[in-house]
View: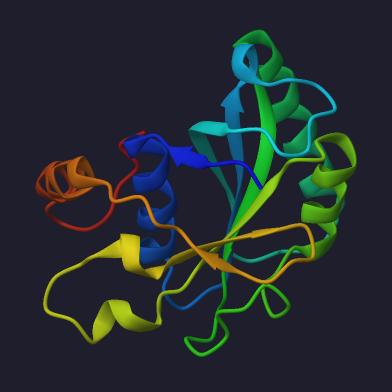
Amino acid sequence: MGEVSLETSAYAKIILHAAKYPHCAVNGVLLADGSKVKSGNKNQELDIVDSIPLFHHSHYVSPMAEIALTQIELQAQSDNRVIAGYYAACENFRDNTVEKCPGQKIAEKIVEYFPSAVFIVVAIRGWYSTSTLQPSRYISIAKENGSPKMLTRCYSRLHTYLRQCLIYCKGGFKRTW
């Protein structure tokens, strides 16, 4: 598996989506820079430049999911980006494994079209037990059906970005992306 890097805004969208709906399982799609992607290469480095939140109520392949993925793919192509992965956060705090995450079928479909796709599992279990939010500890990455591996990269600008979003949204979470 090649190295995976996330832009700060993409990473923040994932965390904020999970934080906005802590009582629900959430999922979304990851977009990579199309100019840096080599077709057919399974072990390439990925630069995830954006994440698009999908659902917080329905996680199965449904007409809504198919339409959403089609629209995302068309928009991504016009911006020279590719769908390069999927993220999910489980409804239950204890279910932080790939097998228990929602949307396995969507993730499998993405892997069919993009063999080096990644699956990010947001482990929200530790968020409420610490005094400060340190999300980089609680995200793991798995490749296809492999076991999760901890994401080792530290995102120092994330805390500043999150603070700016939270200050802007003072009365509750609002979409700032």
